[in-house]
Amino acid sequence: MEIKDGRLENEIAFQLSKKLDWLLLIFYDYFDYYFEIRERSESNTFGSIAKRTPSVSLDEYNERMLDKFFDLVDLFQKHLLITHQPRYVQFIFFYLCSYTEIYPDFMQNFLSRLINNIRNENEPRLIRVNSANYLRSMAIRARFVPFKIIQKTLEYLVNFLKQQTKTAKKKLLKETPLSKNAHKINLESSSTYRDKIGDSTNTEYESQLRELFLKFDILYYTNLTIAYLFSFKAQEFKKDETGTYEKFINVIKKYGEELHMLDFIPYSILSTLRDAHCIVSQDSEFLEMLDAKLNEDGTEGKKFKGSDLLEDYLPFDPHFLPHSRKVIESNYHFLSSEETVVDDDILLGIDPNPNEDSNHKRDVYISDTLNDVESENLSSISKHDTDTSNAYIPSSKNTVNVKRKLDTDEHLDLEKKVKKGELNPIQGISVS
Image (cartoon, rainbow, N blue to C red; front, top):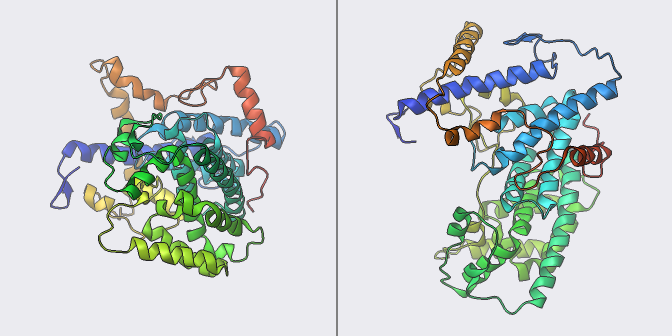
């Protein structure tokens, strides 16, 4: 959208953004009401929030709530994970995961779903890549994710990376030398992905990186996610005794040169990782590798880098609308280089500091918004145009991802495995 004189040029976009802001607040209120989160407010738009006094055992009650959350995660899997770079709607799941003081399993199962997506070769590439993006973004931004969860997440990712590099090494040994026609490799992919890879191979170095990325892109996204987490959690890992960081740098020292693993990490993250390495480890060999790559990437005239092929997208970066932002900020970690106040409200022409009657204004606006939505005339919209509305309808439990459907029994069996920890890498970790 074009911005002119500090306001959105398109008035329709302005109105839609304003409505979306309040609709997000409605969602947050509804989930507080639905999951009985009385700790945040005793009442909201939907009425008085019930006290959690279940007639069944606490374990059974929590399991029922987890089943409801699984329905929402299925929606996330089916719709949001295949949506190209959403800016606001994904924060609904950030908010749901923030119920850690009451339902810690929500956050743990959400992260576990992302980890399993990355590791599952049967998932479409887009699901796996976006899962890596969501995972590193949530881990960096969410104040409610404790270090022990980050620690366990990195354990699984490093082990997966180790397996991926071994597999990649074996594939390279079996194949002929890297082809200069890397773009002709037939892989499942979106058109935008192929456009980004491109057909031109200007140098042998560029050709080699493009072919490696086409073959092992999930490896490089996993590697980038690990580098991000170690970079931004260095102080915590200073006291880590699991040896996870040492395992990570050993993988890069062993396979990094042949697979160009450092080439696929952006310069800014490499620089931050170098600083983190000096805090966490005394390994001089890896420090030399980082310094050499930073000097090489900083050379003027070097236009192409492997990291140019990766999507530079973090779903939970601070793209907030002015009113719904206030619900998220208390659980949100701003980086030191960022302003804690985001100026989307100024761009939208909305007062960033509502007066003392803001609660009344909010209730009135929510009521008006709901009425607008209910009275919207959809009769003239074609069936094709309304297909995406399914994203807002709770899905049945037989839909797990875009390309694979399980029948009800199979899906229930999958949920049982998740609850038992067979498919939940970080289950059972206390968040207190």
